[in-house]
Length: 194
Image (cartoon, rainbow, N blue to C red; front, side, top):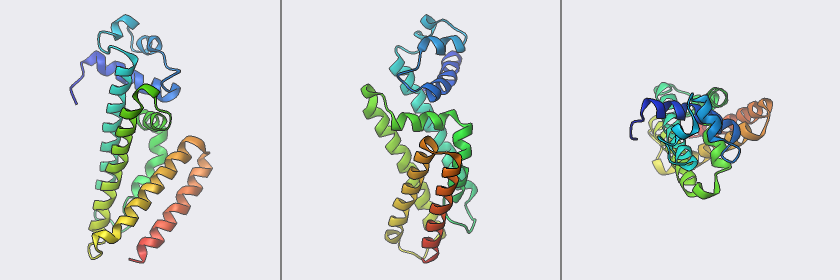
């Protein structure tokens, strides 16, 4: 990723919050520029269009979330629990505290029409990275099990993550907690049979 100027970085920091709260269609470059402490015309010196800014913020959000998830899996390395459980347990708090994740999920579920392909490809890559991290952790934890036998668990884990993403967007905190507990138990019970 090409380094941003200090001003462009500031614009992106403001924009991720704005886009996370308002989505693409209801967002205003004027409001973003004002919150960044500049005129709208000055914003155009850094980003040629709303699409360009939105795509840059999406790229940054993906990088932040890839890094965060990798850290979760790294922190639980060597533990004897269910692979990926730390990520699942922290997901709700991450959603509340990270404009990057809120923006990423809102954008994935409601992508702007003109850049839908870019968003879909980026989000699919994000999910693939989560799956890869889980797969590595599961292979490390269950080293005597054939990798092919773990494939179904990799897909199941991704299904759990996807389900929890939906709960974060559409449900209540209580609904999220209930879904997390149920799906975590099913995964744990299933993995214990290996």
